[in-house]
Amino acid sequence: MSSKLLRIKDISPFLARELKDLFYDENEIAALARIIIKTIFRGSGLHQVYNSSTLLNSDQSLEVSRFCSELRTGKPYQYITGETEFLDCRLKVKPGVLIPRPETEELADMIIRENRSYKGNIADFGTGSGCIAVALAKGIPGAKVTGYDVSVEALEIASENATINKADAAFEKFDILRPGTKPPGPAGIIVSNPPYVLNSEKAHMRKNVLEFEPPLALFVDDNDPLVFYRKIAEISADILEKKGRIYFEINESMGAGVASLLSARGFTGISIVKDLHEKDRFVKATKP
Image (cartoon, rainbow, N blue to C red):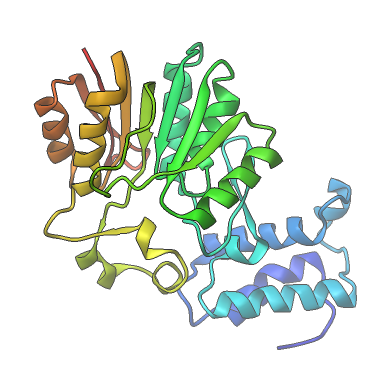
């Protein structure tokens, strides 16, 4: 890879050449170039960052090359930079946790808009990086938010993210699927973005997801795709307060199934909500 010094305006064409045989399209290349620029010039004035003729020094040019080399392996850029943005939060991420998706931002934003003045307990099952819990703690300051996960590594990262963002969120180890596990205390809101990608869908997924992101946080068996939703619905019957709300992110094919589970548990006001791409992506309901 070339060691020639680059100007800011050279970064995007450089990436396009180096990554031409991979799966990045023109818009993704442009977005990656902006991310690299922000990473290299962190702390510098915006006038310098956006002056396209600015010449990178040798270390900065090498950093572009290194970034590009890692992208060529299929490694997601969030794991290269070690962070990502989520609503108004900056989150630390690494291969032990799932990279938050835009759809999950939509979920957190919807919960905040609908419960901004709420002052009770919120339980986030399968918290991962803590993205939902941290965002809710900041967006609903009167609530007490606790994120639960089976992964100790994920819980450590989630705690760091709460500290980084000055969010009053706690995190505890909890295995949703373990028989006999004592459920946590009462909550007025339950939220979960559990694993919902079918194993059979792996054949259509990109290398950067399959080889780098944790399968424990992504995939479920085709023979029982609603296993996490069913268990959380069971738990909610015990811990969700009267008139409490439950929010799920779902596989677009699972809306009717998740709605049926909640109906069987006596939930009312069940809604299947579409994401910005007009796909069934969320289910929400109220406990009578």
